[in-house]
Image (tube, rainbow, N blue to C red; front, side, top):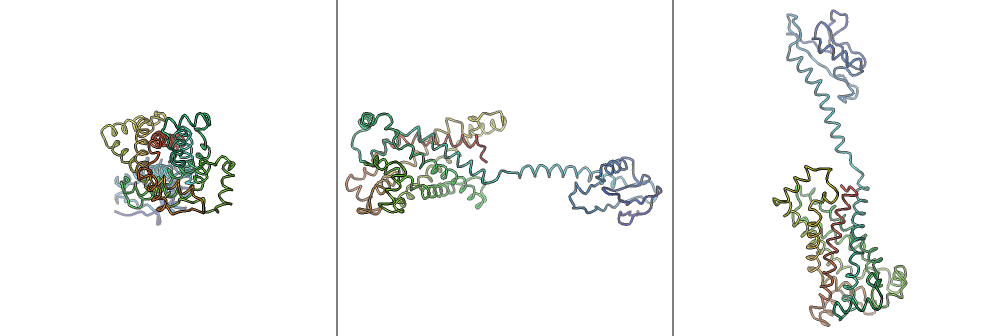
Length: 409
């Protein structure tokens, strides 16, 4: 056996060296190789590619050296060598196709665009849900802020007779201004923190601890950034709030009379309230969701969704389905509200205090218990639950719906 190398090519009978290279490819001797390889070489040379075109292999202009094992008796090329060349030539196309597929997979939308869509999904969810349950929110604030002693039906009659139907939506615009960014930040932060924790731990599925930790972090982040709007809204709803002149008037009044940092009154109880509230809400929702998806019915639904693919409408694309998404959202919201309601009462009372009689969160809590007993920490819980159940259900449903509409990754 003798080796013919392209680096040291002998001269063929046709007058060309076997390793003679034209721009764009490899030239092979007609008398040394079978016709199938000669035709492939000539065809690729005419198209500027060669047997192993540099463009396809991506070697940046370098040449690929090929050694052929030829029998000494001149019978031709060894069949194994010929097969290896043909397999390598075919492999270049496979590699190229796989490379194209990989390139298509890694092309993603900019992170900033995806975050913006994520925030919009949360904001729209807050707008819809808060407007829908604004009357119940107004009743809850009447009990928490004014210390209303009337029963629920008497309070409804009083608001309707004194302020009309619009009275039930009093402060709703300010509530949306506060809730929309709050919900947007809360939803977005939770998903971001959860994904980061999964990357850090290397888990394929979020654990209960990661859900609680991510939920607590999301609640704290949203509370710190959105507390001033909540303080302004509480001032507007409180007695005498009508004379402040709206959002801007209330803002100027608070800053001029109590200082800028008074906008953050109740920050500690707010964090103590929202951190466990978000942790409980997202934790309960994800636990219910995981239990359903791992059940036979849930596995069947996942299989059905994969089979249908793009034929599903937006409602059918909801992972849990419309009704189950609403139900799980309502249950999670109720659990979070009951667990953290006393913190909410203390926070509202702190926001109403002026500098002259300002007390700490702990002192305020003791004062509430002293004046009304432990039950005073749960004043307005029933109307609050009536508000939270539909609010949590609608907000999470609309949030999931908008993520599909906006194609949030």
